Length: 141
Image 1 (cartoon, one colour):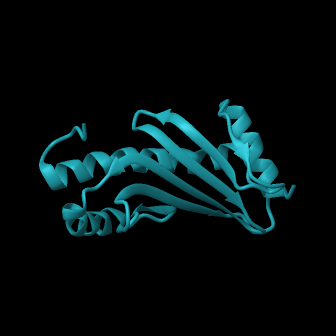
Image 2: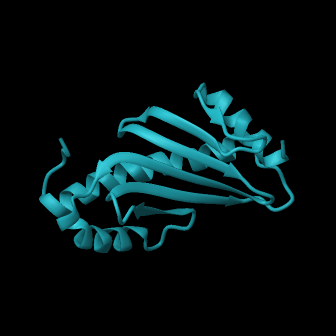
């Protein structure tokens, strides 16, 4: 296992999250109620010098609202430096991507935790903001 994959695994264990490692160096797959936003799927992949985070939440934007959702996401992503909100064009699923470029150093669990938290917080913030922007409501259910 490479040094970044080891660091990711330490962070996931420290959080007490159950995960599935798909191969020696990942990606790591975590599925569950990881935060207040509900069921979330998080993939974390360690490459040679970077760690990539990809989180998908439970929110699905209806097809007729996807153009407006794209405009909202473009505005929300403006100024973000560590990642971005995304929407699957086929299914309308809301997600968040982030990346940690470590170079030759090995990040600590706290730094990896910051990126995991960023993805979860952005998913929650993005789903709430998207709901308000599209429908003037807070609840998707």
